[in-house]
Length: 166
Image (tube, rainbow, N blue to C red):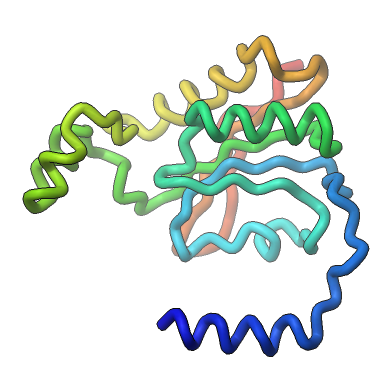
C-alpha cells in the first residue's frame, strides 16, 4: 500500500500546480469535520485548494487540538467563519464511550481505558456542545462566526442546524 501511495505522489509532484498558493484561507472558511471517507469537503462546498482550513478527526469533534488549530487559523490564516460539521451514519453517533470500548478487542480496550472517545449518544446535543466550545473560547478572535452543520452521507446535502449568532 505505502509503495503505491508514494508512486502516486511522484506522479502528482511531477505536475504539481499549487506552488504559490497563499497560506491564508482565501474564502475565510474553517471547517471541523469527521475523518469519514464519504465526506469530500472541498467539492461539497465548491472550494479549491487555498480556500479553507480543514481539521478532521473521529466524529468531527471540537477537541482541544481542533480548537487550537482554529484559533490559530482565525488569528493568522484569514479564517472568519467556522463550521462544525457532523454527519449522518457516524460510528460515534447513538453510542457511548463505554459501548465503543466494549466493542474493541483486547489489548486495544485495555490501552484506551480512561481515554475519552467522544461518542455521541445524542448527536444534536454533541453538535450544540461543540459549537458552544468554539463560541465560548476566550482565545478565539472577536467576530469569528461559528455554525453547526450536519452532512448527509447518502445525498451530500448539508443542513444548517445551528446558525451563526446574531
